[in-house]
Image (tube, rainbow, N blue to C red; front, side, top):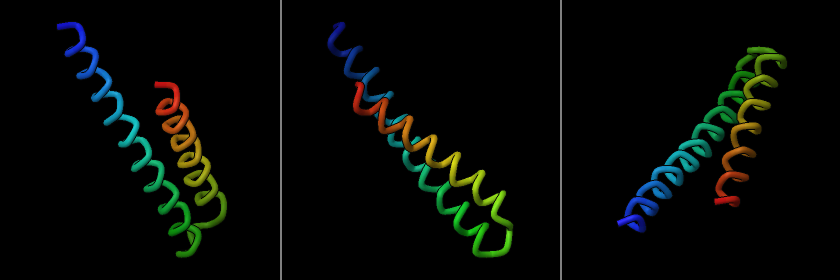
Length: 65
């Protein structure tokens, strides 16, 4: 029974990690779109840095688990 709970927990965290990667790609795309549409480099930089941070954390957590 504990094996079943462990796999369920692992699956839940895997979904979170994949969701984090999707969110990171969305932030990166929004940063590029903001820059290209004239939103300014500061707004674009905030979105890109946030996206990179989420992407790095998601990949590190995926590798560790």
